[in-house]
Length: 180
Image (tube, rainbow, N blue to C red; front, side, top):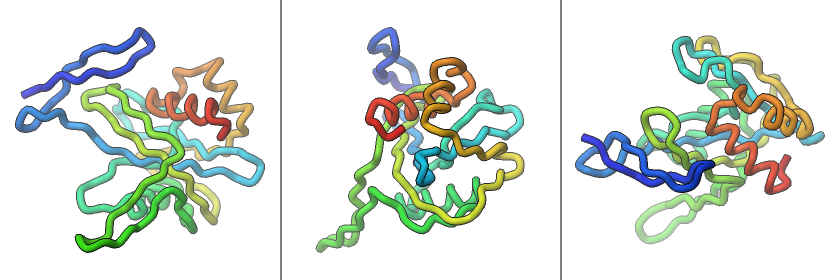
């Protein structure tokens, strides 16, 4: 079964068919980490999962947000798995207790929704602080690299296809917001 959703594209709004469950579109929630050094350089890595259409392209650390995980839990897990870094602080995630339990309030750096690939993606990007030296995750990521804001802007202008499409949109938003 499939559903149709409207997305914004460079050509304007367009409708796309996506898989659905019970008539509702399936949307994959992702969390990405904006990891920056004091000099403003941002940590990017390449996708290294064989057979993926985005193999060898740049992306921010992060991944799928699964049921039962809090935003802070998933971002800590994904950053550590993919980079070997230890997350010391996550900005933009606030736990709020109330009579129904504890809920998270998110204040992300950027949110990007798009429909590349088979499922629409909803990506929440939060700023994290880390310790350690980045390393790749064999079979998942490679080439963890600190890129200066100037290098990121040049990458977007000169070789945009070298980025995972969702990541290029995130980097565009970060540049426009003055974060890079």
